[in-house]
Image (cartoon, rainbow, N blue to C red):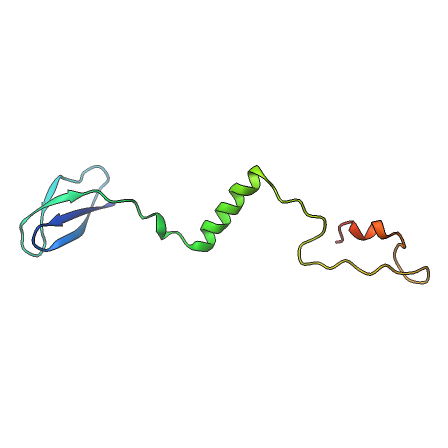
Length: 99
């Protein structure tokens, strides 16, 4: 079923549901029973939730120009430990990803 818009000269715009492809050029208004002509409107593109739209946009952008990260987002690197502590003393090891 699809929703089609019609405009009555007396009562204004209203919507009627028909199976896809079966809408007529005119219908009778439910209020005054007058002849109402079909109008064409934009599809409901704003009916999608904003977080979903943002996720789809991010996905599309990452296909063309993916973000390059040097560390796990939101993760602070551990401090370099000296000879007595655990871990490497090489500062380059801090840039490696951590589990």
